[in-house]
Image (tube, rainbow, N blue to C red; front, side, top):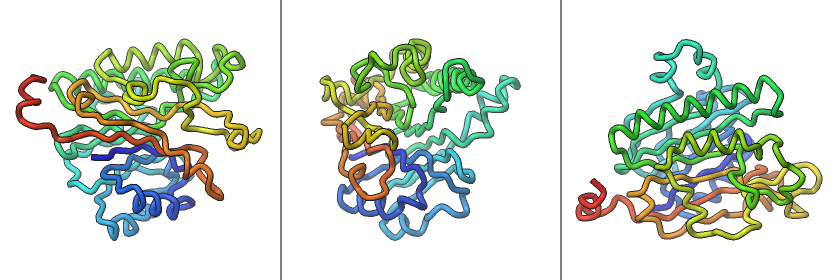
Length: 275
């Protein structure tokens, strides 16, 4: 089963790119971020004609997440509703459409678009901190049920210096600060593994290239799009890669898709070992 994440930077602007990519790569589940459109304007019919089911959470011009799946989509959850109900001071986190999850083929898919944060000393950075802390609480609640999880999306964080083209230029800057890295690590709780790094430990692996400064042409990128798996799912993973080809197209998204190949669902014997 192929599961992918892709920040498309406007689904309506990039619909032909996404459609062609799906047809070429035979992806089973695709999680999109930054769809930038209200739900009623999302191009559902394009995906339906290709045999996909869709669940979406969008807003005009900004943010927006979606899950596209060949399999039935069940138990859809949008936002941090349950967490927010228990903590009224987090109600502002529900305004931006940044997280959607669902049960698909015996796997909990959690698609996130983590806030960028703008700069370390800004109110937007405080918002980013609160958002990741809320994600941590959300994941803790799910883990209590021993759920098989695939957490993926645009995290707007480079976990390590090797995930940045010139790390010395970005020491303690946005997306590379120790604060963000520790928040992400804490949210994962030691129970979710960065599957890309299992298969690709080396450097020069980017998923995002700024539109400015000829970053793509100079291959000056960052790895900020991630796929995290619980141990049981990780054991079923065959490979994980970044597909740079879509970034080379005319008028592309500034992100490239990240894909994981997993033998899922596992056999009954494998499930017995996990529990």
